[in-house]
Image (cartoon, rainbow, N blue to C red):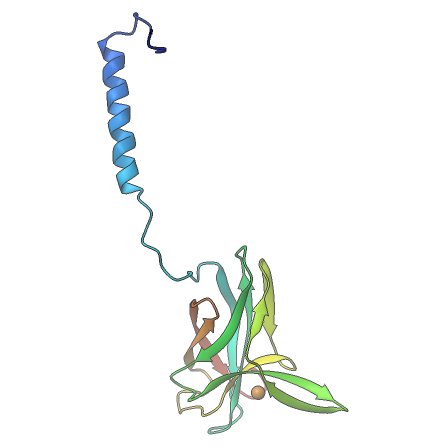
Length: 165
Ligand SMILES: [Cu+2]
């Protein structure tokens, strides 16, 4: 049986060398391009904009606001937050019932694929339960958001006064 090579008898030694080089390159690239070890979902698809914390007065719980973007193809769920400056940092949502605003604890905030969720006055917010002296207007506080898939997202939250300035 004749080998169905596309190399016609006219193909000289030079062409053979180029093919050999190409094969070596593909092999080398294959080694370099080996898949990375499996790891927890990355935070690269998550982004946070306009973070800030409203400090009312020293020792009084302070609320944190931001907009969270999920640029990934899968929904994510924010399940917790932490800050070294807050003691407990909880997920809360404000709601108004019969004209009275109250806050409820939230266990999970879903963020759809290619969607966003706003943490803003009157709605979702972080609650910095025991603000340390670091939570003062003009300062910045590190906040880490934690997601159900194991991802974390950290950001510096500027602290503002009661009026948001
Ligand atoms: Cu609250």
